[in-house]
Image (cartoon, rainbow, N blue to C red; front, side):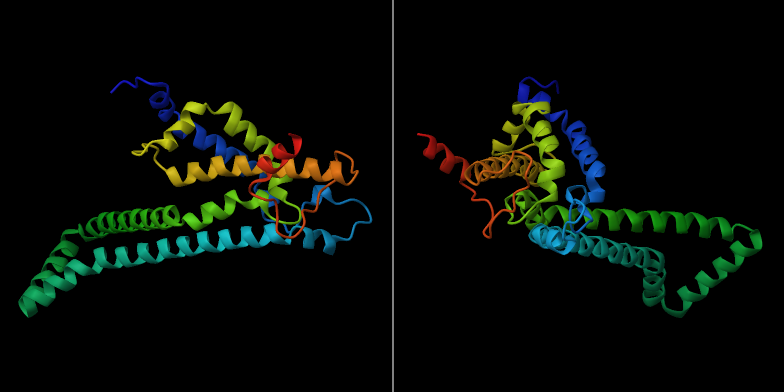
Length: 257
């Protein structure tokens, strides 16, 4: 069916936008695995102090990684169970139901196949099907568990609001905000407001948008903090305990009136 509205046309770009999000994450994945931003370290800096400044963010990232690892291991376990069930289940049930006669018939069929030289073909085809089906089941299990793990999505999106310093804010935020609010059309985001949302992964896109909005909040807080404390524009801000207030934009707006 031909898309009629701008929102429907934007739905067709979901895969394209997903690839752009993944490009940014791949580009900066090295920084996400470190305990502090090495680019921010200057000669003579106390590395342990730097790590402490980034510790709040690090704990969030570690929790998210732990959740994903659990989902991944669950997928592997499911793949093993499905493989074993498909490979040994039918034969076991046939013998269980048919008894000794069925077991003898199966054994005779195996021996006949060996003599005919076709047994290895049967085994190869069966193994290929069983392993493929098991792998598919494991992957589906992982994606379902991961997709339902909304806590991870929420935690990722709130990283820019954390206390201390943030690698995500320093390395990813500007590019992320540009993607979400400039490169991607507002009509795409309107789909999230629909009661019957047709996006393939509403939870992830909600987090993508929320992360961009929280990046904006952190920048506004840091700019205000620098101004209040006579700091230079390039000076890093160690956000006080409690993090960036979620209503920081309203707070700053009311002060300007």
